[in-house]
Image (spheres, rainbow, N blue to C red):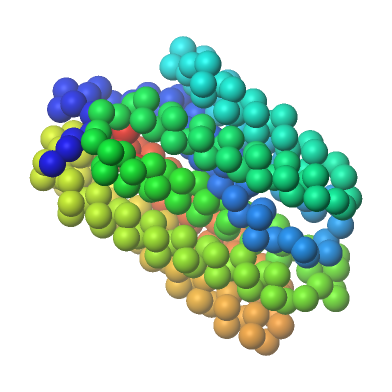
Length: 270
């Protein structure tokens, strides 16, 4: 079986982990934005969400460059996404803005994938699992943030149809299920054959961190997504938005723990 980084891989620094998280967060926010249109929430909403994607991408690039661990390809991918975003955020209508969003999503996803394969030494199959897991983490954080922001928009646009928030919430639930399956696949499929991962989750502290990561970052947000779905059946967007606030905090806690485990496991997304 192919392995991820060599057994003597050193733990990743928090600056590097923070940079990777920011890039995944920004790219995931872009991906989640594709599920919001054509919600009539006005240009300020899309500009706010564009900023929520651009700031983490720029910060991630700065963090990685501060550690001298980025390269030309990674820089070009991130800069490509940042260059395309204003063409999505500024115009009010037109096909150009959705082409710009698609270009930004492709560039952001390429940056996530490229930075992952740079820190791994895996065969094609395992690299694919790791890449999908990293993209799923970003999309989870991005979608829950977009859902929370969209829920708040119902206070400003009371006639906004409920199906827009339902769609983003269901996207979040689907991503949680996919991410859960990928975490299980990594732990049960590769931990025995990959020493850094085995060490990371083999100790009592590692097992506690993994349990907390799964409980806070996956199980509870999935339960909250079901609660949001129930609230939206009764058109209760205020309750749904409150639940989404709590779910956002839990997802961020879960992903922070996942990044800590990832650093100890030689870059394997958990």
